[in-house]
Length: 54
Image (cartoon, rainbow, N blue to C red):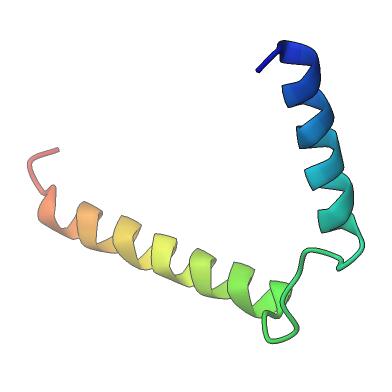
């Protein structure tokens, strides 16, 4: 398989993915981002609680 044919197949695959929008209907970006922020802040708080030697 040559580089040109591989690149052409990837472009075709990417173009097919654009027609559906790429997002699932049940995923709310604000809820997902807020949940990730809460989890990261919780992990930061736990880490700072265990690191009392500073």
